[in-house]
View 1 (cartoon, helix red, strand yellow):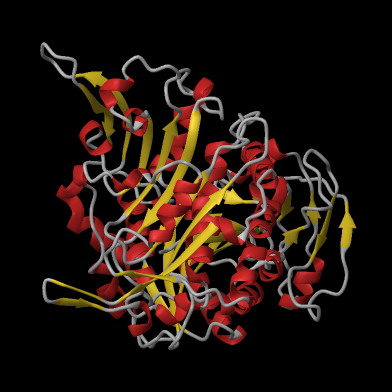
View 2 (tube, one colour):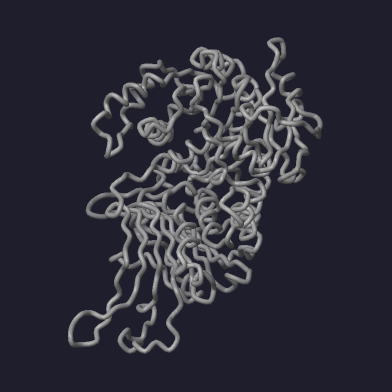
Length: 591
């Protein structure tokens, strides 16, 4: 949704103690009152696993943990050190339904407060996405009555300078603009700043003192949003956990993607954090399940019998623009395909879940991932954009970016054909492509249906029956829309056929502005809603699909196909689709 997250993937871990713990998914069972847990820090902090049984006495002191267990709040004595508190924390298991109810206790009551710390507050993501999303939630009265926002970064800055920086990116909802200035001033009064190192226990302890001053003795619930590079996630989580987590409420951590580089590095991070992908918070992606499961006309068609291919397309019309050094470490496959597009694919292809509960949806998504055919090198095309001159303007190539190593083979474009070997989808190609510096910006799902058997009007369409193919398009961004392409007769005496769109354009149908994905995910993190969060076994299955391919690309030093800045894609992507007897649906300029 990251997101997060682009703000892409988010990871989310929760603890109701003064330090963060991670429940072991392999040893816990939903509905059981027993759970095995290991402390989620380096070996010197935790040398053994513990297992115990306990009864929850008060639902007002619980926070949702991984796999549906809950952690009971333990109020530490004043003489206890953070490390001693870490060792003394007790956990107890409870069924998922009770956990879900428990997580939604009223955080707006007078005796509780929520403190949100944006770690990496001076960065572009914080300025352009996180602070505006928090303001939007405040503007819509979605934040609790008592809340505080702290920016934390290495840059030296005063509270006033932070507010100055933040106010430049704040916007108000269309339908409530009349009190925008007043709301903005009230919001900025809740924003503060503390400078510190990301790996300093002392600096986080100083932050803790400031948080307590603003919490004013209330039950403190805390969120740390880590808008920082992945290589310092663990240090920041450890410092926040040991020095600045809540002593009497829950503490949750959200981190930015990418979540590791392969199965091994992801597994190491998973020990400490839970993952969330912010694309799951996009309005149209969430509507995907509604469209399929609440409309009778679609569910019978949702299979290999009627669907010819499914295309998941992500394109950006700009390059790395100074962020090449960061991007070069990951590439487009890790950055977009392994998380965003793959998560959309699992939501699209999953079987009907037992319910809308988080665990039921996750179970079906994992089944899809485990049914997927291993990716081979011949199923993939990679590319890298090169310099292009148009209209007297020179657009730089990827390696022209001074932050990118010369001779880099990191792909900025990738296309892949994936297959799900189960009864519903066997033989249907799921074509996925993602790239930077392409001709336009879009994210969409395109469902191409099969040709009509014995079509009576095939002569009217000419030799290419693709011109008569029905197509369902779910455009995630920009200009959110859902439309179905159908064939119809043009009015007149002759028999001329035309393709038309049955169109639901969100901007035309709904006057209310669509919330940004960050708003939804931040609100879910505050409320303890886990439906959009990725379970560890789901993350493992996603990496298992892509890790062998990524290693082969790097070990064999596969040279990417070069494509001009602003072009549609490398030529190889078209050949890839043609091998599966389909065409990319986004090539039609009229759509």
